[in-house]
Length: 463
Ligand SMILES: *Cc1c(COP(=O)(O)O)cnc(C)c1O
Image 1 (cartoon, protein in one colour):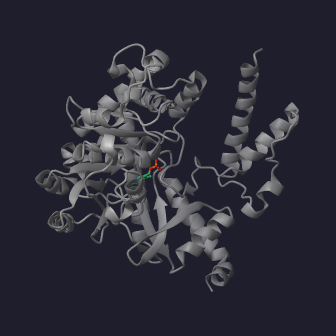
Image 2 (spheres, protein in one colour; image 1 turned 90 degrees about the vertical axis):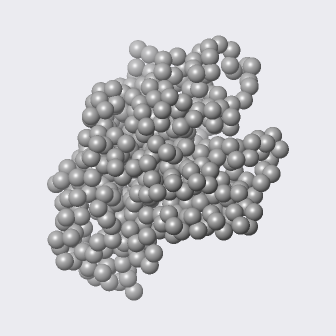
Image 3 (cartoon, helix red, strand yellow; image 1 turned 135 degrees about the horizontal axis):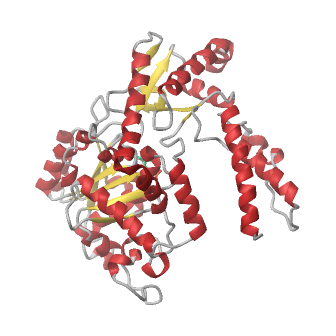
């Protein structure tokens, strides 16, 4: 039997261990970071390890690694496990292609392009559109900014920036915008943070006001980022109204849909993205709402010319066969690039576009269950709004930072806190579409029981 066949037997054994653990202990046995290296043997040594000890340490690592697929993990903007997508990702690891050329990736190129084409159609981008799979949402935003910069200041590619370029994003947008401004050479001080209304949406009038001020000061408005699903509140910026402004002043419009751009799949919720076809670029993370393994992010552009202009480079040692449309390295940031498309494709292929729509819709249904619950229980205060899958709340005036930290330390449930304006609250995210209504209600029961049984701990921690 080959070494791989043997290792796959071990793999299946470990999968059983993990699935059992997830069933019996949905929150992983937590190791305090202070004693991590004393608790599991993570050391790399000169000599080989015998099979039994190797298996033992692998089990320990599995058991104590935070479990993101269970019904008590609500901490971040991903969760759950879509089995068909896991299957695709395991196959991608075995195949080990690199997505830069048709020569090396073959049909995988077509798989990636099919996802991109269908996504562009859902946005309404038209025949000149295309896209690529960057390393994540931060990188998608970065690539959008680079394309906007190069479109506004084309000689930049050869000579560096020659104009004082300015970008705009809401106060509630993702922090990658600030980092990207620095990487792209605009500088962090040239990011204008536009006010958000009380529900977390960008205020278009404030955007236009700021653009006018910059133009008066001989600065060059270049890039507007709107967010489809802000990181804390899950709010949708008004794309259509912002597009009217970006069209008027000839500014690149990017939709950061890392969190909730997947509502392009939902007939019921697509209206939240009204005007999206007017944008120049659009990104979404299939590893968030759609539940593929990390990472699976798409950047889509209305006019593929910009992708080529900003990212293609000649490389004779690499591009030796086939046309540019099949050599995807011509439009990517990286050289060697992991196959992030296959896991999305296996899921999509097996359940159909209607199946993806159900995944997305279920998250909104679960959020309604959660919002309904807290709105009908007087011990809760709500901080989030309809059409958001981030359900933000406080319970009995307990400090949310203390509460979330204790829930984690006591291995009860994993959930985080966030702030908006003056408020800090628990941010409960219903992004795991494999959860049921009962799982959502169970979360509240688990939380309430914990508070009930730990009054004294909570009081001590709060002082
Ligand atoms: C998660 C997120 C990002 C970053 O995506 P990564 O894949 O984690 O880099 C960007 N924008 C928004 C709105 C997000 O929610």
